[in-house]
Image 1 (tube, rainbow, N blue to C red):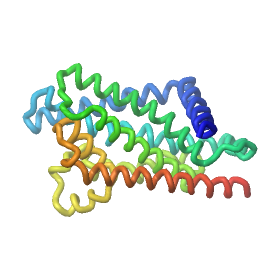
Image 2 (cartoon, rainbow, N blue to C red):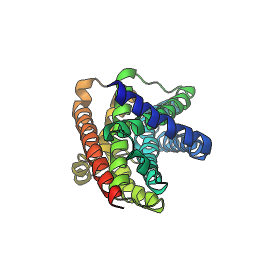
Image 3 (tube, rainbow, N blue to C red):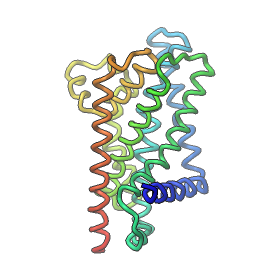
Length: 258
């Protein structure tokens, strides 16, 4: 266990240091959630006839887990894995006893730091405009962490199995991401969906992320109220860990043959 912790910390520290030295990605990942939050809140305030505080309270959850974490954690993890392959960093891993689980956990820890930073930014902006989050903050944090784990898992799978070059990242994220975000209720409330789309949305993890965090943080729902969304998200996140580890093992087999 200690060995796994040390390996994961080393991987996370290296990824964060590289991002810090480049800075550009970190700046954009700070600007993006702020802009999405403000736009969503302004639309809700006008179209749903809400107060500014209410609009920001309802806009914050989907702006965070549906949009900000999607691009930073899913897109970021895909970019990380592809960059490792292009720069032949993975070749060096063959010479080390680093396990697939430690590598996955290290990427998860690095993007958790980024995701939690985005969470604090979105929360700070909403609270500064008097938004009220009435739900259990620890439960909200758990949903955010499960969302990050899900995104990193999907990104890990896409990065190891489908993306070969940096140019592939944007195409992959756009192809998989945009339909999921729209169908997940990120830019349009799921309450406006027709029944046919709602039935499809039940299989979309982004939909369950949005509904779970929105229910807890903005509506003050209890666990029983959002239990179906939570358990779907928990099972999905666990599945992504397993599939991510298997994807890592398969990627290593491919890289060894190159």
